[in-house]
Amino acid sequence: MQIKNIIFDLGGVLLDVDYDATIQAFKEQNVTDFDSFFTQAAQVKLFDRLDKGEIPPQEFRDTLRQLSGVRIGDQQIDEAWNAMLGPFPEERMTLLKKVKTHYRTFLLSNTNAIHYPVYQEYMKVRFGMNGLEDLFEKQYLSYRIGMRKPDVEIFQHVVDDSGLHPGETLFIDDSLQHVQGAEKAGLHAVHLDVLNGSDITRLFNKNGLLSHPVSS
Image (tube, rainbow, N blue to C red; front, top):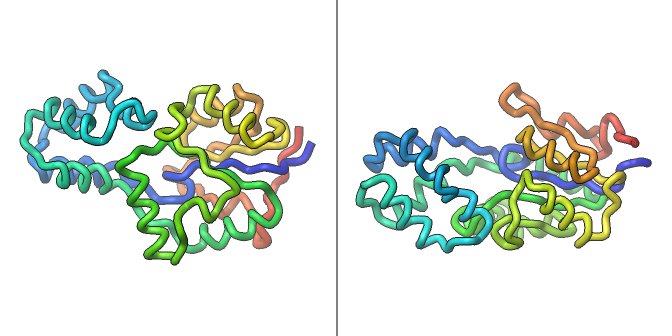
């Protein structure tokens, strides 16, 4: 069964992400013991809750202040949190437009209400687009649908909502655990190893077709 649908991750696959930039930005705001602070935030599932839309941005900021013990303004928190967001290389934009002519394309991203407006504004300024939604048949954002990768339920939601056949669907992500979640849901999946130089453009030929078609 040939691939007819492709679900793309956003950060790390289409949009460059630099987590160290956020670490450095918080340190510049006197959150010096960032590793300990980050661990505490992870333990209370602060980032997961923000990604699932379970808490509003203000509660996220207030909790960050409490965990860090540093008086830091809302704007400074947002700037540090968004520092990880890098560019959307033009060659990936060109690729997506070609891929859309051969496959049904979707976006599935763990993102939040602080990051997402930054993506949208970037797309408007950089490419003159309304936003990310212009690139896909439909986008699925964790903070809007209340689910998060790598949970199987989020992949099942995408499949059911858009009427996809899992065996005809390919998911591409730079996180191995997310790829494993997709496979548990019956999708084909590719782990894009960006830390070792892999790039989404290498999975497709110049016409936007998968270089090595996946079949079941």
